[in-house]
Image (cartoon, rainbow, N blue to C red; front, side):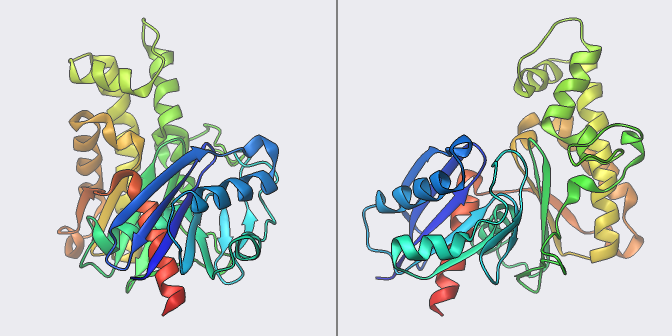
Length: 300
């Protein structure tokens, strides 16, 4: 039986799964990402996670934070969540350590591949996936393949301008991007500016919204509508068969989903009004399964 490992490397945790050719996850390991200790420590943590899975693997696939050149398996650029990660020859380093073929791509692209293989996008060839959490990332599958772009940076949905964010600073250094109003930290900050009682998490804001608090409902709807407007515009230019939304902000309930869908549908061209927007289905396994799919592709 062919077994591969799928690895999801993020700024805070690294997850690995032992996966068979049918997509069954036979073992899982999760460990903190030692980001502050530098790239060599992050690679070493990924190697240990694979070895702890307990089975001989024929190949390894990786979904990594950052902009990735999938041809060379090198990290082109990365945020401060992984200091020094840019320039890491991740495929080379893992192949040397593990002695098996390795495929590397961005983590959101891996997420999309996982959902297209066994999740909410199974059976769809043209898919837009958006992950809404600390930031807003995206991936566009065209005929089942990831669209990387000329510089491997395709999918940065969070950095599309939107009127609701006009003048607001974005994490990229620009202003006016949807991430400045639609990400988890942006929603939490907006609520803190408006609320009389402090909160420590977006989950608390969502709970207050579900309980009928007007301020919480207004803040969630504000961010959701901005994102829906952006997603509708992207659909008008790319014509996917399906839009999937995942990430922690998607757990905010109908107070977030309903205005998102409303604004999304309002932006669509008439021939595209039937494009469905739905939540992702695989949860934390999505990127691991997508990475495993990459590994199976290496084996042919």
